[in-house]
Length: 394
Ligand SMILES: Cc1ncc(COP(=O)(O)O)c(C=O)c1O
Image 1 (cartoon, helix red, strand yellow):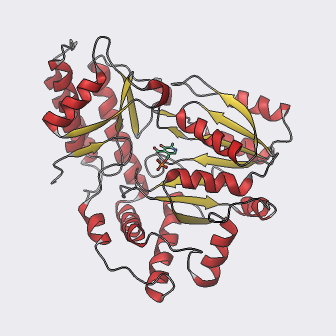
Image 2 (cartoon, rainbow, N blue to C red):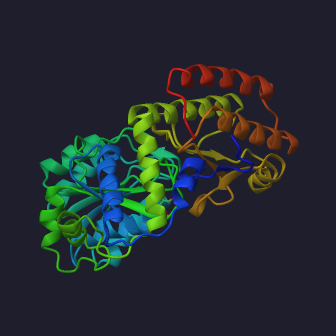
Image 3 (cartoon, rainbow, N blue to C red):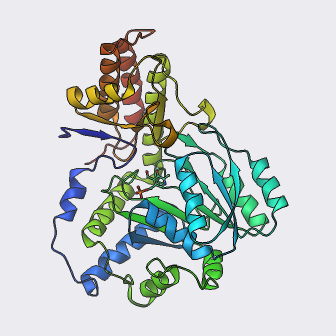
């Protein structure tokens, strides 16, 4: 695979050639038949990716646009919203609620942890007038996946609350059956597990969400989901000019996902993440997350004591062509982040481990066992696991 530079940040991530090639096409009329065919294909395949029978709309905006869209359609000034946060993206979700005039009711946890369902239940009992519950599923700043979305969905349904989930850095990289887990508005991003370039977010909308948003006179103009719905149903078009080139990319990325199969993609993500965790555990590095809430897609590690993480990242980039993310928010300078997403595969895992281990060695880190032995053993196991999945045609 010709990846001279390997982009191992937690999004954007590496994009395969077939997706680049799909973008090298002429711009078409977005009010004509060629666009309608493209849009129909995207809408159908998004339902597959989200495991939903409801609508899923691709938006001309990065992930944050999807968050604004979901929040803005539901939240009107004065509405109470249960905002759950345990990292920077949860805090941003809360900020979106505030910007639309909502009154946040906070349920939070230390970074690296996640709250408990009981805390959410208590907050709902104490605040029966909240309109919605909003959370991040995979907190990209800490590498924590809160594995309670199904329970939260049931809780929201029992309490008759709209359930908003930011799944930007996890959709297609871990389990997320949107309908089965009763998520009303689910947000994904193109540049993560779908291996697309950045610039498109996607939002699913349940019937319950439509009922609520139709009543919201303050919903946004550009991101009006009712308008997205009527344009799609009546003409198979978007309300405004879509980012056509990225729509080509998204269409190809979704076809690629269907070919591989969602289950296989999730398994591939899990196997690669497990390989990373095993290697880092054996090397004596510590994750910010706990073993029980470790993410399948974003691996966040504390800088080892006495090691300059920024220098390690520079060496990995300059000597190995492997780009690793730095700490985000209050973890800046304290940890480094690896995106194990999209077309993550054994050669990418091995190359990243080599880059990190070699740089740490040169900076004087004492490994508890020979780093090359760790890599070759982990590599062998990963190869065996991935060998049971269909090969990737990039
Ligand atoms: C969980 C989560 N939410 C929101 C965002 C924001 O997405 P974007 O930077 O594409 O606007 C990100 C991006 O990393 C994310 O990981």
